[in-house]
Length: 58
Image (cartoon, rainbow, N blue to C red; front, side, top):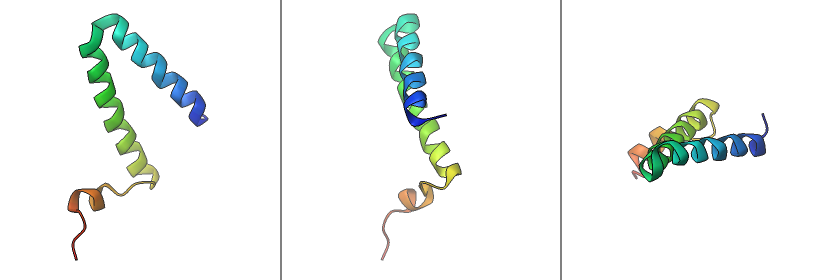
């Protein structure tokens, strides 16, 4: 799946969240989408959440 198709799917899901539950549903969908993106990026190896959580220690 291309990134543009994935973006389209995410946009459609956000529109459904707004239509069904209003602004609160949109915010919940947005937060869960960000969490899902971060977990997916961690699994793919594009992001190291451990480094973000630990911070920069020298």
